[in-house]
Figure 1 (cartoon, rainbow, N blue to C red):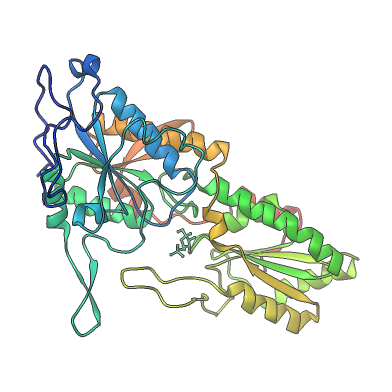
Figure 2: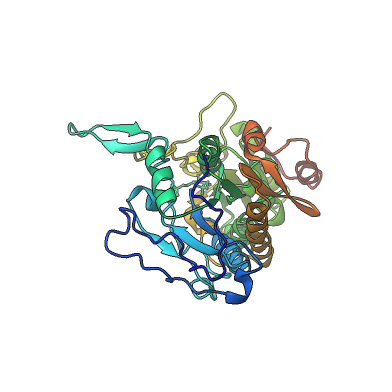
Length: 405
Ligand code: F6P
């Protein structure tokens, strides 16, 4: 089952061929809401696509949206923005037109103009029962019906593994969907990197630079916790670029004694300060990951708190004054780097091309030097983590960085 009929080409079609008279738009929905491109209508089949951004935001999302909208408009297609993940198609938020005007000047802006959420897969939507407890229901049929009523013929879903899973399930229902990988964690398989990662690495690296001066002034150990969930890419890349002394990642189990040994070796050689970068999902040998707070219904578990635990232990074992800090959501904010803007722009345009080529159920990916599309099923079969044998890990070891192992 595909969304919408998608076959109409008329000589002078209104861009809004299916006026928005679904329950989402009870009183509105006149034709011709969107700008038309009369000269392209004859060449290109009129088409209506929708864009969704899901999961945690990442710098570059707006650049993807902009590129997708501009590429689609060049083809004479209409574009709708589904607000807050798929909530807009479930009557929980809006559906908005995305025009060349809506995307003007947003390439360098962090966040996403159509908002996002990491709660509420349409296939397991959290609802509160009368007794106050929560359960999950499948609302995907409702989503498909609403999309059809809006004349949406294809969806570009921008997101990480959670959104890819939703896209895979939608594709299995016959929805025409193309995905764009997004995450600062860089843990999506099939693509060399995701946009947002470079910006997050730069933010973490700048933090490490700043911690150096204060650590050195006080002869302290500074422990910096960075994001990444179960993947250590941000810690590894930022740690090496920022010249940390110890990098602790989920892929390499570490021991407190080894971490402290490195710090004391530095101390003995006259370097009385040390910088430890720890990935939020890392854990000591035989220990557990550190979980912070409670997750809301429909949300993944929240990792965090490892830096504080580790800082306390380092001070206890070494006797050296130690401070810890969590960089947190600063890594998700701010303007995307040039690299991320460019990659995001390439992904946005490639997603529209993938729609034109009917690459349903596929994800655009960077397999340098090319952009490719690969089946989402394949992407989700693999788990992307730091390879402890990777040259960046080896480089780090060769220049004396400890992984605490
Ligand atoms: O997946 C991106 C990410 O920023 C992770 O690195 C982090 O663990 C998580 O999202 C934080 O999510 P939230 O926005 O729910 O705190």
